[in-house]
Length: 188
Ligand code: SAM
Image (tube, rainbow, N blue to C red; front, side, top):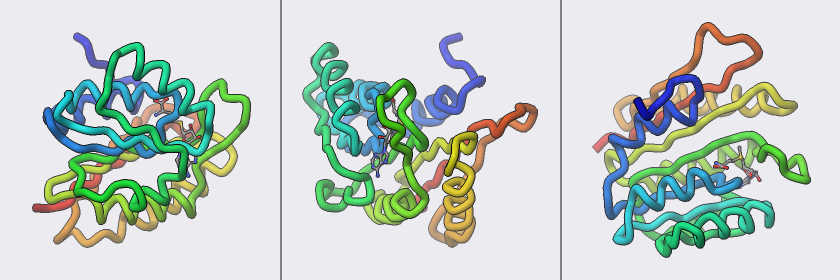
């Protein structure tokens, strides 16, 4: 079996496998080391496109290396915050992936923050096409993480169910603030 359910990122892929189609335009809102960017780029194929955002040069460097190694040319790497995604993405998208928190092993402890994350979620929901899905992996164990998680829930819990399906997936037998995954589908 190729898929595991011990990490939210792996669980996320079980969902994404059934959501993302060849030719889709998608957004990686938190590029980091580019693992999701590469996964998404392969999934959408050469007729699709991935817009990937990060505020750290380090993330762009590391992701550029991976993208080049895989010879992917359907990726646009953007050094800017995801809260500005509407400046770069001028078309409707099928999927937007957030992996919140900090970049493991990075030189600087730059974390995603509640206010900009919320702004990005709101803009992202506008950009999603009908039946498009936003996935948000949330980590609350680090400083500032719990605040961000609470704000994300406070907002997404109020999304009108006539327009959005909001699903939460979480480990209920893990200690130490296990990560959680939110999926938001814009209804057709
Ligand atoms: N998905 C990534 C991967 O595959 O390696 C890991 C992402 S990491 C958990 C979170 C990333 O969000 C960090 O690289 C951090 O620099 C970035 N970040 C922080 N604030 C941001 C913002 N406002 N806009 C975009 N990215 C941001």
